[in-house]
Length: 362
Ligand SMILES: Nc1ncnc2c1ncn2[C@@H]1O[C@H](COP(=O)(O)OP(=O)(O)O)[C@@H](O)[C@H]1O
Ligand SMILES: [Mg+2]
Image 1 (cartoon, rainbow, N blue to C red):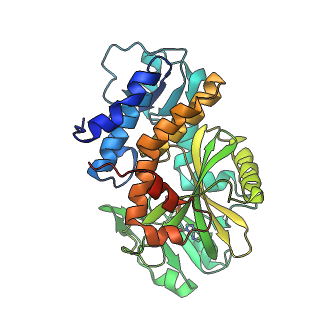
Image 2 (image 1 turned 60 degrees about the vertical axis):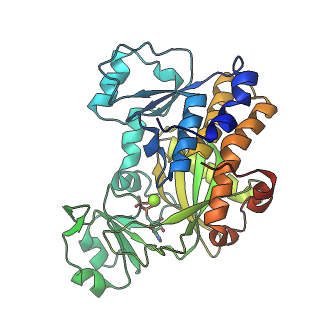
């Protein structure tokens, strides 16, 4: 564990004393015990915050590293499940007789959400899915309008994705190509949406609880339009103020979530969407284990806690968590990505958060 040095006093003073007897933790079954991999490119300070938040709010288990231990996993507590869906993960659940009724996310649903091809086939009749086909012949036979975006089935962060403006461009593109050292070919092709804005929307079951606008990182400028096929995209995740997000947007998202949950019953999950100029929403993909930096570790803890125990957390406790974790993340983002934040009309008031809370140095 990363040592917290100057963070110590700040992180461990109040909650330990005031709320210790009150606090009920959430069990968190992950693939690896390492909290550092929970969010993307974190710096040391982010990692220290992640570790502190995880330690304070969750009891962590690893399907990979704890499988040979003798564990007693409580059967009356909520379980956030990020443990994967391979054989190992399933034997972990069996061996320790994990109460799957208490689990937020299940391996079978997670398996279904990982494949872009499976997902697109399942929902191809839905108006919110960009028109998609699975062979190059179909594209060359005019079943899609150009520009077309080609993808590999199991890609992430934009890897193995390329936009083709014309049929000739696609015809002349050499397949296979290399992604992360492996020879790959495209597995699916979709019509390009004329993207106005792009969001990660996070759900607890059928309910959208968080909206982040994804703004292209200005410094690296890696978007699907500018990057090479073997490169990823770089987004800044700007937190939206739910009071600024139009009701119609949330309602439409909740309808989409209900469509998806008829077939894939995820509980803590994300839908990545884009909107076009007319405000129409299109789904790009879903994610069964959305990244959790310390800010989201807190928010998801609160949502799971209140859903499972059917009681509200005390607002003073929430404010404490806000001060320690959420506002510290937001200050960091504001410090590094002010320009991107300014581009997001629904953004929370980062400036006033920045003024209200002191930045705690790592
Ligand atoms: N149909 C589409 N139209 C326009 N842009 C798209 C489309 N599909 C994907 N993109 C762009 O490509 C990015 C990556 O696509 P996505 O399917 O989410 O793959 P990944 O798993 O790599 O994130 C998206 O964030 C979006 O900017
Ligand atoms: Mg994506």
